[in-house]
Image 1 (tube, rainbow, N blue to C red):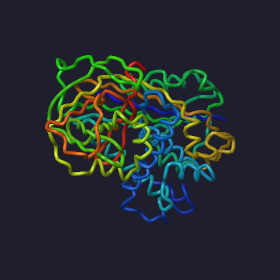
Image 2: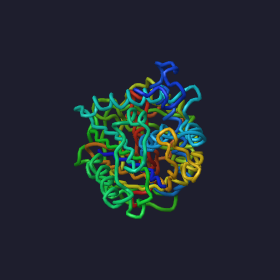
Image 3: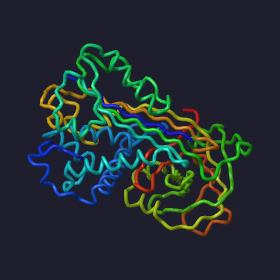
Image 4: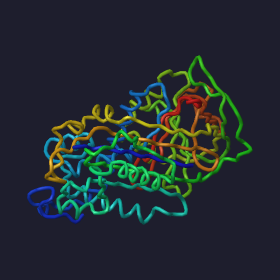
Amino acid sequence: MLRYGVILLLGFSTTVNSQCFYKDDASKKLNAEARATLYKNQLEFTLNLFNVINEAVPNDNVFFSPFSVYHALLLGYFAAGGQTEKALKESLRIADTQDKVNLLMAYKVDKRLRAVNNNSDSYEFTNANKMFVDTALQVRECFKEAFGGELFGLNFHDHPGVALGHINEWVAHVTKNNIKDLIPPESVSQATKLVLANAAYFKGVWASKFQAQSTKKQVFFVSETRQTLTHFMRQKGQFHFMVNDELGAQILELPYKGNDISMYILLPPYSMKEGVNNIIANLTPERLAAVVEEGYLGREVVVEIPKFTIERSLQLRPILERLGVGDLFNASSDFSTMTEDRGIVFDDAVHKAKIQVDEEGTVAAAATAIFGFRSSRPAEPTVFIANFPFVYIIYEKPTNSVLFMGVFRDPKK
């Protein structure tokens, strides 16, 4: 199973220097909880973003990487100053008590640990951040020291086409050629000063694989009035299964090999027309944590879920503006932490993601039956058939991070 996510912000015309972020960075006390706070901020932003994206495309399949979006905006936050920094801090759900010095420390620690764990035998998750800066832009020395691995100079002012090609090639490389030509030619010009980019790639193998010979075509109920045929994978095995009244969903955990990352499928009652929307609206960090952390026992479950591939592009500017990023896309935007040069104005934000779900790796779920909640203990084995719209989340347990998430509404879209 494969997951890829990319976001780019297109901008136009741990060791930190003691006066890079504040008048005296050294005066900031190091907080041992900084990394945990970073993950908590990220999760709050993730669920907010999910709500807004679902409202923007209420009748379509949804797939995106909130992890990717968050990290691209986090680069912008580190570079920002004044009112732009304040607005980004609020929209990214960064706590008032979390200063940039501690946030940078948490970011660097997370980056190092991911680099160490990236090529495990169990799965591969790559998350790469870049600040592509015009070579004419005067970047402050302290910022270069703090973000040497993220900064990359490109000659936008003389050769915008070459710069564009380099960024798209970088994205393709990180995502193993699954995301190509992300930025269209008209998005980069001689006036481009800065492109903030994040690319994410995930490849995992189910802890319990589906057998290809069990995959068969079945009916998927797109709505009460429309249905279609699609391939369903099937297996019977021991899985974590629960019914959550607060979310109004049956929940199935499908772990990947290594058990650090799992897909959670949240399936509403077939009788509930707004079931998916209700799940998303009621999904809070606390409720998601309860789902992940609940010590429910495994039970025998018959699982039937669609086999699918989805690729989606999102114009993020209106979505981010709804999330309150302030003047990020206005001429008044302030990036004085990164440079004393003026004239950096972000014009657009683009996100593209792709998911491939098959017998080796990914699962989606749908059910034909109408079911109630906690009216009685389900018969053994439990039957979990995902043949109508559902929510799915790819969750990294050690960091409490949502890597990818989506809504599967229609196999034909």
